[in-house]
Length: 280
Image (cartoon, rainbow, N blue to C red; front, side, top):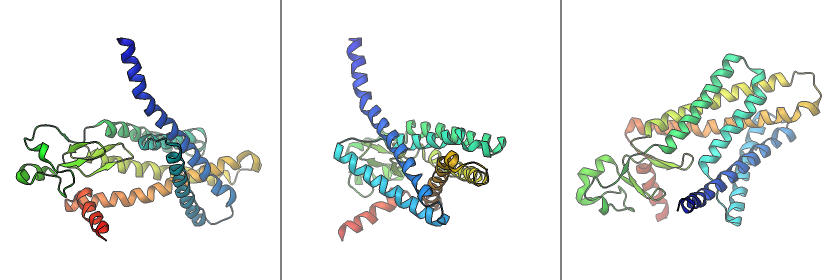
């Protein structure tokens, strides 16, 4: 009986392991492909390299998505985020840290460690799942605009209960389902979500500063091109990658600050817009 249970656990974990392996491969493929931009366009202005990096990143993600659908395999978005962090952190420890002071390096390591702890927390934290505490929960309309029972609006709409089709659960204070964190963002973890966004912005800004310092010093070293070209290219590409992440995350963060100020949830704003588009 024990052997059967162990086999069931192993069978249930195998798909997750496969998705994590695929995500790891995608991270390596993405980062190595981005390193080709500074390699072949080293003489181009930084803004050109930045634009090309964004285009390459978009093309790689699109092609990888097509390949996954063709092969019938899936990746894990949280694992993709996690392995990207590990890749940047590993490259920093192995290469970039030699160009920065011990104080800055220590702060960056603390930032990354806090990001990893925050990721683990938000992926496992209950966003505000609703079970059977409301007598009319079974009457909630999944496709309705507010996702509440019209006959019991006072008790549920105040809590902004929404149905997440991905998690297949009702969530109190539902804002959106975050694929990158593999969890809904609701009443119980919204503050953690905002703090984590700030942490990502601070960590990526720190890495941009550190990698820029490393690239600047490396270009002044009196070494042969064959010895340090690939290192400088990878440092430049990871810096460009971090800047791209900074830009969209800064916009995303400002959007949530707007939502907090005006007491709006992302799902409440998106749903009417999507319906209007579909009507046309």
